[in-house]
Structure formats: structure tokens, C-alpha cells
Amino acid sequence: MLFDAMASGQTALDVTAPIAVRGPIRARFLDLSVTDSEERALILDAVTSLLDHGRLVMGPEVEEFERRIARYCGRSHGIGVGTGTDALILAVKSLGIGPGDEVITTPLSWLATGSAILLNGATPVFCDIDETLNIDPDTVEQHITARTKAILPVHFTGRLARMPEILEIAGRHDLRVIEDCAQAFGATFDNRPSGSFGDIACMSFNAMKILGGLGDGGIVLTDDDRVAVRLRTLRHSGVPEREYCEELSHNCRLDTIQAAVLLRRLPRQPAIVARRRELARRYDQELAGTVQTPPHVRGYADVFYTYTIRTRHREELRLHLADCGIETRIQHPILMNDQPAFQDKVRGHSPVADRLVRDILCIPCHEKLSDEAQSHVISAIRDFFGARS
Image (cartoon, rainbow, N blue to C red):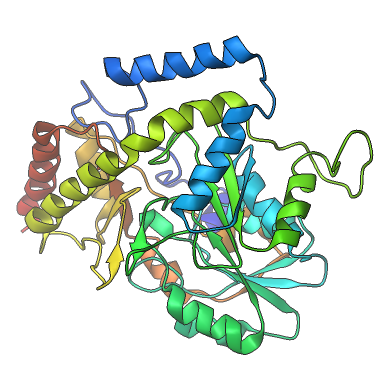
């Protein structure tokens, strides 16, 4: 395992770092530049409006953004926060989960998922994943104990976890459900959007996300009036009004400038998702039989935060694609079970995740990727496997 290799000082290809592309870049993994004149004008207009009214902290754009996202997801309350990590930390805390409690989650996610549980004093318990790279509900119940308080599914790569089954398990065991929707804004199951399933849901609007700001941003969604009141207190250092601190927390309000930019970008989100789905369909068709492409599950509409392929020849393929001017990433190469900071603080067993994490590779699939650049990616992958046959 990578953690064991790190601890023993072994030398190996660092799967945690991007491989430098040699020569000109022909297919970027992600492009955060703003070159579209119309989008630039919208963003500059957002900044101008902010400078005009001067309400830089918790300005009117924050409340409007909260309302729009809550309505989009069919929720009663949206509480804007500074980051998706803040959303997770406050969500766990707002449900009263703390020391002595356990939360069942996936080992394959950005470490913020597990950190949010640990930072509240609770224990992450890692079940396993299925071929979609999301939580396998069939592995959840074996990890439930008297200390279990919640299940925290992650909608990984922009695909919803199997929420009907997870909710059924939670209902039978009287557990809360916290959705980590950081990668899946706009994804649906039977036309029901991410963020609409759990007792509470957390979203990220980091610049890398499909709906992204010019930095960080997040939101917590809930239908529970009391939880919403507590969340609004928690995001402002535990202060409901003026100077009276009711409980310890940190300052994690959503910046007004991020809310303003996100409001301007929100109408463009459907077109972004449509383009990513178009790119994904072409990859599905032209890479079938060459690599393991993302499986299709009836009723699930993915937004393709990443297009993640699988191959036993991942490291060689990464090097080949870099030589072809193609940027790739591995998201995420270290299971949370194996994170150095998590050792002796978690429990659970995830043999499928241990196997699949060695094979996953994300290739470019963002809305700014041209047809020509995608053709180059496809050709490069085919050439690599053609030379091995």
C-alpha cells in the first residue's frame, strides 16, 4: 500500500502528484481560465454591484444564492458557508454527533469527508464501494453498532450513490443520513437531484467544481427548522446575534463576492453539464473494450465531475499520456483508511476499494475541452493499448 511504502522510505512512482507533460499541452485536465467575453462581463458586473452596495459580509447575494440552491434541490433551508469542508464539519456537528459516536462512510473520497467526522470527535467507519466507485449499501449493515449515528454517502465523480437503499438501511436502524454532494451538483436519480435525499446535505462550490466560484464556497441544505437555526449560529463562531456566543464554532460564512459570482454562473450550469455528458458519451463509445469506462446504472444521470477510467496498466498509461501532452489525475490515490493522519482513529474494511483504487485514472472531460483535444486523448489511449497487443 502507498502508506506502507511512504513509511518505509521505498522509492516508487508518486501517484499523488500529476505527471509533468512534456512539450506543449494538448489536452488540459481542467481549465479555470475565464476567456469567454460574456462570462467575464457577468463576473465583472457581479464585482461592480458588490462595490456599489458595500455589503461585503453576508450581503444580499448570499441570501439569494441560498434561496436559489435550496429551491433547486427542493429543500426548505440553504445555509451558505465558506467551503465544502465547512459544510461537512458543521453538518456533522449540527446533528449532535461527537465523541463516542460513529459515522459510516466511504474510504474513496477527498479527505475532508473523514476529517469532518474526526474533527467533531467521532469515528469514521469505512465500509466498501462497488463498481460505480460509490458506497456499496450491501457492506453498510455489517459495520453498524450501538455507537453508529449516521451514514455519510459521497456522490463520487459526479454520480449519485445508491440513495434509496442507503435511506432504507438508515430508516431501519434509526440513523441520520448526511449527503456529501461536493462533486455532484445537478446529478439526479429518477429526476430527483443530489442534495434532496438525506437529513442534511453538503455541497462545494470550489472553483474546480461544475458550478464553481472564483475561490471557495459551500452550502448546507436541510428541511429541519431547528437544525437550520443551529447551522446559522455555527457558521458565525457560535454567535446567533451580536456578541453572545452560544457554543464554540469557527467563522465560516460564505463570502458575498463568491455568492455574487455563483449567482451569475448558475444559469450556465445546465449547458456545462450537457457538454460534459456529450464528452462522456463519446468516451463511452470509443474507449469501450480498451479500458473500463464508468458503468451506466438505470435511473442515474451523472454530471461527470470527473470521467474516471480503470486499467491495470494505469502507471504506464499515465506516463504515455503525459508524453502525448495530455494531463491526467488520480482522484483520489490514497484511501482515507491509509491517510497518515487517520491512523488508529478509524475502523472498517474495504477490500474492493483497496483493489479499485490502484486502477482508477481521470482523463480530461471538462466543458472547455474541444472535440479535437478529445480526439487526441482517445487516439493516445488506443495507441497505448494497441502497442501492447
